[in-house]
Image (cartoon, rainbow, N blue to C red):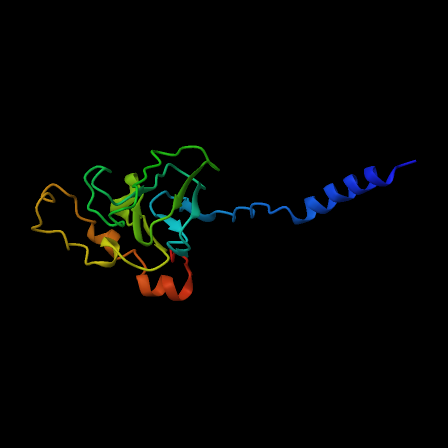
Length: 180
């Protein structure tokens, strides 16, 4: 037979479990697929443009072939800066196993342009808008020309420039799929 004190202790523990604050479950990552056609001539990210909140995670998943995701940043093979100045650049390295993935959590608001190292010259690029659009990703592709310390930066190839969805389109639609 349970005594009143034991019953109150058990009841109090049960009540405490109901009111104890718990961490909210983390949101599922926003997924971007790394794809190409059967001929391996055309390669793309899908979606090519996404809008996320600061602190969300983006996950690139390799669907076929060999791909990479890297931020446009001078630390990545001298590419021009196309992410917010305060943001940390990423580089997945070459991914070779179907189903493999690479995650990045973006906390700084702004526009993040990125590319696939082996397929950048084929137009395999993407854009992420995190919160309020700002930073170099909102500027013309050649904004840095003539500025000190940028003389060895590589420009975004012309074919890649044509592959980016506009910032306005991403903000309005939230997800922009590739037309490849």
